[in-house]
Image 1 (cartoon, helix red, strand yellow):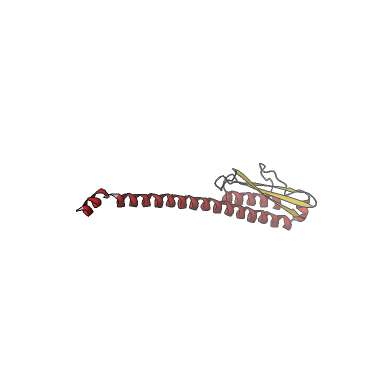
Image 2 (spheres, helix red, strand yellow):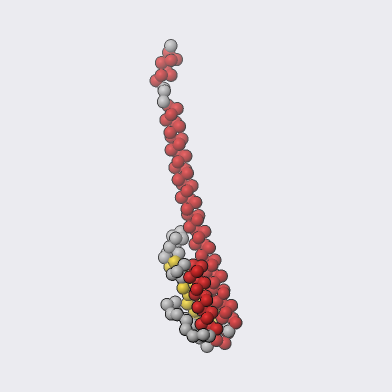
Length: 145
């Protein structure tokens, strides 16, 4: 008879334990989802940096194809300027900028500054989705002619 009274007083304890276990599991799963989102943002940012490097190498190859033009300043362009003319340099820059926009977003652009000894290529894009990234990222590549 005493055993029956003890069991009646403890009814519902198992349900509380199950609820606490479900709460701990839910918090763990939320933490895992947050970790996954952070990993995805970081991977996106890293992929964009890789594309920026590849795109800077593509214009470097065009510069190497016309070193004399690069030394004369034919490839020089500011980030807000548009290439003009039908020269190899202008068409290469136009194609390069189109590829930047296609691969890094509509706000992506680039600038080139060459002198008689070296060229500096700057690729600029929006990386606001990256983990703790600023809205504007720059990748600077310097090449000796």
